[in-house]
Each structure stands twice: as C-alpha cells, then as structure tokens.
Image 1: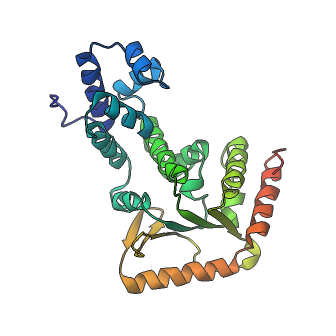
Image 2: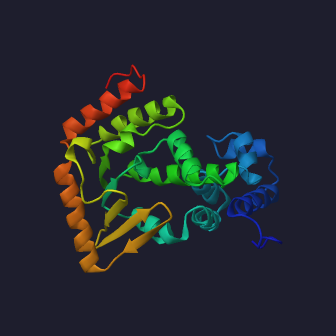
Length: 278
C-alpha cells in the first residue's frame, strides 16, 4: 500500500494513515473497527490513526491479523520504535528482545526495564530538558514497551544491581518515587528477577558514574552497552566484554544480598511516605 507524502512524517503518523486507509477500504467507522478488533475503544483507535498516541504491540498484531496485511503494520510500528530510540542503542534494544539473560548496573537511576511511566517521564525531562512534551511521551512509551519481555512465555533472567543513590535521589513528586519503589518490589517478586543494591557504606567501587548492561544471547554470545549522560558504547570485542563482566562481578561483591537489598528498598519506600506493606 503506497500513501503519498510520507517522507516527512513520523512513523506514528505513517502507521495511522495506513490503518485509516485499511479501515475505510473495509467501509468501517472507528466504532465498527473497535467492534471487529475487540478490546480497543474507538477513541483510542482514533488517536492512533491521527498519530497522537503510539499503538501498542498487541493492537498492531491484532490489526495485521484482521486486515490480513502479513506484518506490514508491524514493520511500520517497528520504525516508530526506532524513531524514538537513540541511534547508538537501536540494534542493542533489538537484541534485548531475544536475550536469555540481562545483567544491569546503574549508578544513579532505577534501571529502565524496572521504571514506571511516571519515573521514566521525570528521568527523561531531567536528562533531556529541551525535548518537547510529545517527544518525552513517545520516549516513555518506547521504554514501557520494552518491558514486555517480562511477559514472554520464556522471559529472560534479569539481574539488576543499582547504587543506593538510585533509591535516595528523589523525583520532584514524592508519589512518583514511592510508586517506583513499590513497582520495583513487585517486579522483584518474580522468580526470574534479582534486584540488589550497593549501599553507600560500601564506599567507592569500580562502577561509579556510569551504567552497564550485558545481554546473553541464545547462542551463548554476549553484547554489552556502556552508557553515560550523553551517549553510549555498544561492546562486542571479547577482551572488553571480559573486562565488563569482571566489573559487574566486582560490583556485585559489594552489593547487599537480595533479601537485604529488598529490605533497604522497603525502608526507602517508607521514607517517601508510603504505607504499602511488602
């Protein structure tokens, strides 16, 4: 299906135009499409068609199936994902979807795959102050979409280690931070998730000032991503990967046990005024 004047549109708008064209070809109103593809309101479908809201992966899959488009909509949706992910990390995030183990260390923020939408929004605003509101919303949606890997039939083993600073550094709204820590505790209950904290009492350590992600793939290979405040470096060279793995092991040796770590998170949660009992 060829639509005119697409070269300067965002992937969201492009996807919306394709959906609208397919819908009108079937002679369906938005309400009619909502009835055919159950579980999605006509108002939500309307926002997707206008490119004002990013479509969920599940909706795109349902529409591809209903219209018999053989994955065309999913391909456009994939471009939408790429559009809102920094160039340096696009290939890495594609690999993340197929990883069987994910090891993460962060020194000042809650790891991305554990973030709530409210916390992610606050983090993007702080780190990218000049980005327009619509751009922040799209980045948040992309980050939350990535968390769908935890809902796979065979989710990856996820091991997150964070510095205590990530827990103690508040967002502007204390409720956002409270919700974030409560969410972290809920995710940590899953059998394939391990969360640990490096306490301030551990002093200086080998991973201060940066963040690291290591992906283990099905073939046994490993790929790393080292991030700083203004960019990131994908690592595949064996010698560097060995050094990064050793750094992860060293920082893990400074971390509290899983039980102690969750206890510290609960302590911080109470300090943010929450009365939720975990």
